[in-house]
Length: 175
Image 1 (cartoon, rainbow, N blue to C red):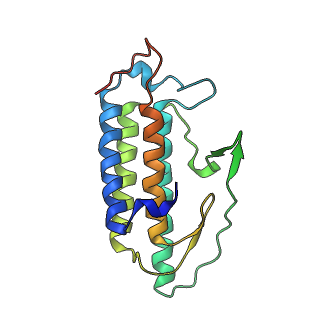
Image 2: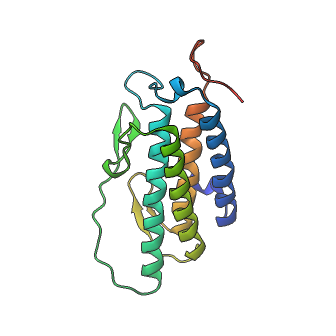
């Protein structure tokens, strides 16, 4: 899906709000066993997926801060960005946003809350119309608007995977 589909600055932020409500409802309503079981063989657990979402949002907030500083005319040293890697045609999480796992539901919920607060704080200060860009590992050079759209896409993408019906007896409750 093209990031433009996530709309204007306000629309992308609204989509982030909607997907977060759904993610929190899913995590809070799920049985503990489902939260700590890989979604499929070799995959992350639902708690690890949520941890990854938080790590991506923290990273996005840092990018928004950098773009704001560049827009203000500040000279910043270049940051090396590796292009995204694919395995079996699927994008792989860059090293800095891979979950460590082992966190409790409460710890992950706290991480999600802190990351979202930081993202929204930086978004409030950002200029969505400024042309400054920073490279995304999979989407290329993005403006602040592009980064907020990418965050909205990212959470919705993982939420959709978490909401897929599980096998009978999975222990996951549906709300």
